[in-house]
Length: 250
Image (cartoon, rainbow, N blue to C red; front, side, top):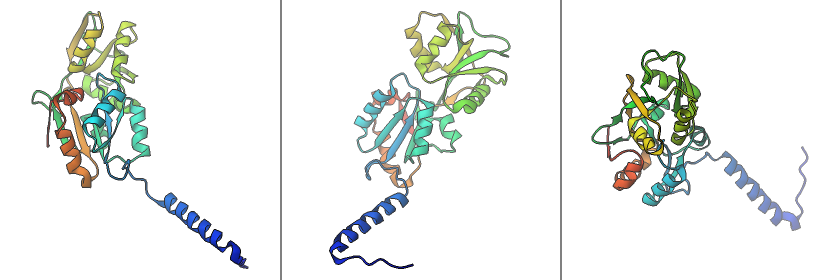
């Protein structure tokens, strides 16, 4: 192949463009980094709590400025966030972490317990007897198949129809408009929702409960200490926002 000589007057421009092209190539080949600014560990949070995701994110970011925190309110957004980035740590309830094979570095506790009971709630009277063919509402925590499997474990049944909703506040309308025979949620969350409705809600304990509380899984060993210390230093109101009152190392 014949080489085309570069005229002397164009040589400086040729070198500049060559360096620029080489730089673009290096950027294209560089692995994606989880760090938001090269310094702060990135933490993804997916918890169904009684507050807007944006408010929770602001609170956590204010309390833990040494971390780059993103809070997801919907499972789909959380899933996309994990796919597009590589966070240094993930915060979620036990089933969410287990689905991804993540081992908790910090386990949240409330009243000394690392788990909480879930209940089947319905209007006016508990749902007794067979649940075959019943429509049960639940927050989408694990995707379509995962949430169905999780519900089956909690109810010890395999022939119920799950009606997934995106957020906790979407559960009450299912009962108010008779869109579901019942809803499944933690007893702690139900007590919060009871304050917002005049419905007479009855509950039934579930054989597959309890379910693990919020936990922190550190995925990047090099940032373990800063992540652990940051969460352990959270004040009481912020921990309550996450549904816990203390952290322990499993």
